[in-house]
Image (cartoon, rainbow, N blue to C red):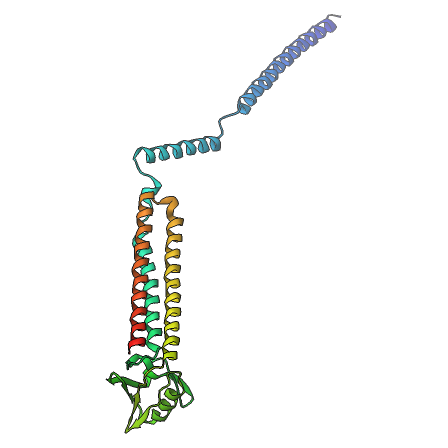
Length: 265
């Protein structure tokens, strides 16, 4: 009986120890879970987004740099490149090319006075190749009514004569050894009037070319006007207008001189 009592006591003590140990582990597990949840909560606590901070700092930096740019007194208009010299040079080049073309056209017109350039535009065909007369011969003025045509190659003499006769100049050159002599006949009244009309048409054409160059320059200035000072824009436009007037006057002077040459011989 005593043996059974001792065994019962040991079992009770063992059960008590097991129960205490179980409670302790449960507390530890609860503490661990609670502590882990707290850490998880802390870990899940929203932190400032680096990207958001980066964008915010970038915006601040941009605003600061813009402000410093404004504070420094600089402006986009002041930093714009000076396009004035380029625009003027381009417009002048185009206008000058128009004047050169006008001079060439006027030189082709026959007047009562001999001119070395009046034969330059004539096309000569030799050995199946077409070339301008001034590439095959030297034209010189003997006197105010006579031209001399000296070919580089004497074998092209006949081809040169045929080309001159076929041209609308109304010339009838004669062979003089290894050269051609072309007498300039006086112009009829009808021919003078026709030539003056051609001069007037050439004058109008070149003026239109000059105005197109002017408009192109003004368009360039207008496009740059968004970043160009107003005073500078007006000054540049005025200079382009003055340049246009200068070249228009040159065209008028050339045409008036040619008309005088036609009518007075």
